Structure formats: C-alpha cells, structure tokens
Length: 235
Image 1 (cartoon, rainbow, N blue to C red):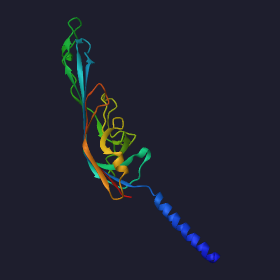
Image 2 (spheres, one colour):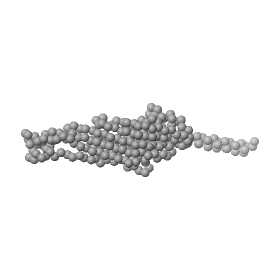
Image 3 (cartoon, one colour):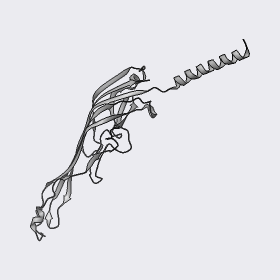
Image 4 (cartoon, one colour):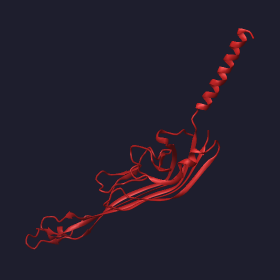
C-alpha cells in the first residue's frame, strides 16, 4: 500500500470518528407540556389593627384577602437539561386574575370622659379598600411564562423560574402574595427515573393535584395546583 493511500485512509477514519464523536456529544433534548390551572387564596385577620380617633374608644379588626389564579396551556419546544438536572420550558397563562382587599370590622364609641367636639367622628369608619396587584409582564407575554422542573427526592418539583415573582401587590399590602412560587414549590408525581429512561421519540406523563400552605404562617388558605405534565425526548 502506497504512503499516499495510507494517509488518505487515516484521514477518512479520523473524519468518521470525529463525526461520530460530535454526534454522540449532542445533548439530549426534551419537550415539556404543562396544562391545568393554579389558584391561591389567603386571608389574614389582624385584631386591634385600627385605633379610635381622639375622643373615641375601641379598636377595629382588619381582614386582608387575596386571590390569584390562572389557567395553564402547553407551549412545548425542545430544550436540553439545565443546571441541577432541571427541565425548563414555557407555558401560556390563560385568564390570569388577581385581587386583594382589606375590610374592617368593629366600632368606636364616644369617650364619656373626654368626648370629641363632633361625636360623629366616632361613627366614621374606614370602608373596604382594594389594592393594586398584577402578574409579571414577562410571564404574560406571547412567548409564555418560564417554568422549571427540579429533581427532588426522585420526583420533580415545579415553580415559576424567574427571580421576580409571578404575582405581586402594593408593598403596603400586609399579606404575602404568591403563585407557583419557588419558595413553596409543588412536588409533582413525575418521576426523575422515568424521564432519564426515555428513548428518542418516547414520552412520559403525570397528572395530579397539589395543595400548598401560604408562606405567611399568620394567614389561612393555600394554593391548589391541578396539572398534567408530559415530557417527550426529542433527541
């Protein structure tokens, strides 16, 4: 065999090995679909929150309420695994809604020892108040909200994958507001091992309902998350 032929064969083999290695090095791609809905309702009662004006006696209690909800529509697209084995994907929020209110209860009476010049001030009680709240502008774009699935004890927990919260209200609103918050992630039934075993073109699904308490321990209520997840290996 001539030296030229040997060199040519070596180059062909090297090219084939290089191409094979490059193909093998390509990361696996997964497409994640999420459908369902999420709702968070919470209330907080603060006794003796409002004191009587001068010349009056008594205190008022305040009840703060917040309700946030959204439907979830799939918006799958292929993506590799992210750091910590996360699956990052997007979902479209449908009919997003949030409201927050404060109401008072109780009454004031005239102080018999030091009555006010105008006794009517003791019957003038603050009315209900509505607070300004909203969803993150980034989450409501046509591109969808970025969600993440993070391995935890053999299953995936799910949360809104941004530093800013999905929902927020005025800073003065005394009750914490959250929806799919990373601080209280929902643990799904989707198993990490099932995703890892997927071959190209195959998929695995899981559905269920999770109920999480509100982060504020003073409040009552919680978050209910109904979901159907489908993970398909694209490459």
